[in-house]
Amino acid sequence: MKNPFKLFRKNREEPTAPQPEIPAQKDEEAVTPTSPAPKEEPKDDFIEWCRSQIHGGIERRERNDIFEAYSVYGTDPKGQLLCRCYHRYPEHEREFDLSYTRALTFDEFNRRLLSELDKGDLRLTEYHDCIRQAEALTGTPSDAADAPFLGFSEEEKKALSGFCDALDTLKDKTSFQQNGVFRCEGESVIGEERINIRFRKRLPHDATDTDTAGVSMTEIGGYDITDLWIMGVYNRLRDRCHTLKVSRLQSEWSIRKETLYLVRVLITDL
Image (cartoon, rainbow, N blue to C red; front, side):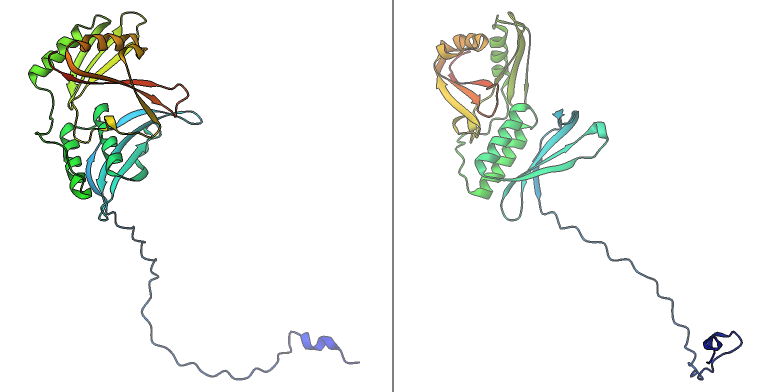
């Protein structure tokens, strides 16, 4: 029997066929690997008209987070009225991030601007500029026959200040005007409840007569006012006005059913 292990002896090599010669190639230029081109971000075509002041608060999540936020109002080339809201958490040392973008109707756009104005987060001149551009963009007619309201005159401020000083149901009172809103703040004589009364003239496209989602508005008589301090204001205005209307605004989306009183007057003499 033949020995099969002869095939694996180290000193036994199989003949190899001659290999053809490969011609020497010229040195080629070194090719540097290139990384893929960075992806271009989509162009932002938002056109900013105005932005509100930064305001802060506390957001209740797993724990209480301190946050800051502001809103930017404008449009896009398609002619949509837009609101962009930004927020950040300064306790986390983060920059502002876009929270959301909303496309709004003219009435929704106007209501948001009026809310910013009443809170003191938007200047009156900015409000007028934005509304004028929104009117032109949407073809909404303006009912402003007179020059735009730019704030109370010195005579009007003096009359409003005197009216607030005469409210003997409030103590430690302060009053000031900001962005076309005259504010009278104080503490109630009984109960030490903090009271904030605001005076503002009616503006074009004012939202006081329109429906607001989540808020019911009911016109009431003076004796239906349940707040003692608002009743005091009502009684002082009743004999000095040509017309006086009171509406109760109540949140339908709140368990506590917060209530605001809206008093609309045509004043003849404060």
